[in-house]
Image 1 (cartoon, rainbow, N blue to C red):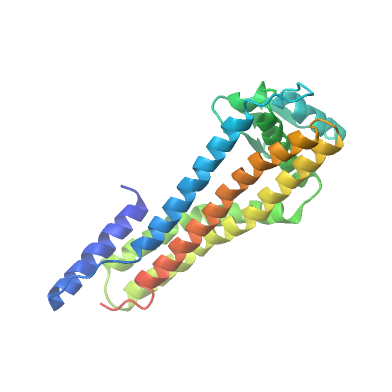
Image 2: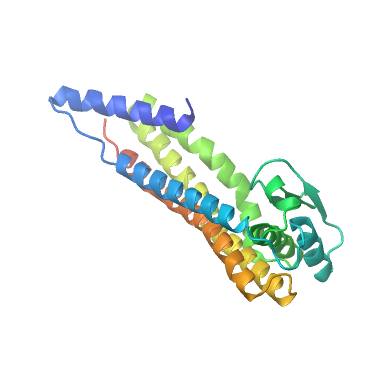
Length: 253
């Protein structure tokens, strides 16, 4: 059971006890917010998978693998200190700025599909963002520790607030609620970073002739579907923050 589950468990049982003393039962409608986020995220994830599968079957006219596409775009931008490696898995592609390595998954590295070219170019888009000093990605990197701490600190303080009584209870709850803002802020900054990386990718694929006009439109569909998962992540974090406010802000014993 994770910290979120523990916080929900305590909130429900403390609330049920309080309501039971008054002699009535009340459905926690804020779970609807969780459900909305879950459904939206599921739809977006399904869309990514289906779109990728569709265009993973379409071979590019250039017949270049994802690894070759990545290498070509790196060299075209004068970047020679970044390696392109192969990692296991599907859609586990990512750029690690600490090691200067672009990791391409099984579904991308050796594939000559339109989908693979789009994903590979997207990861190089992140490389270019770092090398050109793209401000939003600097902000995101700065926020990462805050988001990581906020995720755990939020529910730790909420759990403490539910276990204690009096003024200290509300203090802990307030700290927990606003610690979660770090998570929302991270998702808010991540969205434009991902959209910009995709825009750079599509522009480069077209301008360098790696993909034709029709292929570029197909790659755009893949990257647009992927971008929606970040929209879903932001929406889910925002809904969870609203739920925390509704449940625990100005809570009375």
